[in-house]
Image (cartoon, rainbow, N blue to C red; front, side, top):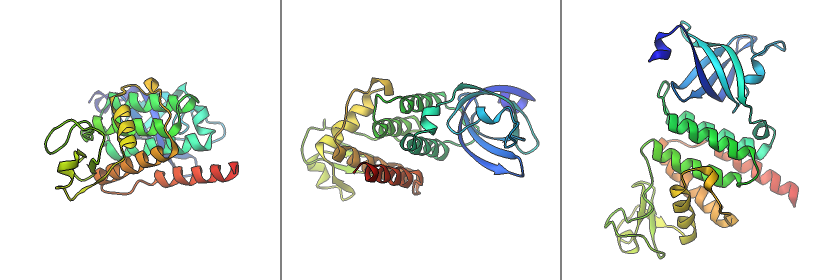
Length: 261
């Protein structure tokens, strides 16, 4: 790759996570459209006088200059393209942003460029920064399209067994097999569980809506919770591990609901 051959190069980057290193440095995991996921050493960024610190905040979309290092590449300059400050300063929005960042970090390998996923993440963060679309709906849209991008698209429109078009009824969903079964085939497939028609309708709508900005629906609380449950089970089955940020999202939601009552 050009980034691996050139001594100094530029990249767009979204900060996924960061870790303190030494007394004044940080190791920052960023996601770039050209070079994929990378770990960068940001030297001196924890000093109060650092000019880069504000440009490498979590979830910020930045332009960075990167120099090759012996073990880690180093970020030498940074400037903000879009800070997404509204996301970081809102507890609910930031909890969802942590979830999106965890998914990108989990599904994509280092140095695996995927411009489509970068755009998907950037647009999801932009939507979170606004107040037009509910945060949970943004997350479900991101999850479905991330699964599609990495080769695990759930089958939601036709039966996985007989290929007939799915209609409202006693349909079943198999996390293990990755999709929907008609009532007749679901009765023969032990890995299926019943899925509500309204939940399936929302998932299908989000799957066929390419841009997050094209979302126009509002979902009832029960359907939102059921959609989250199905997609979480699907994601965790593919990853073969629990998602940590999901618990943070749930805890924040419960805390905020407690304040409102």
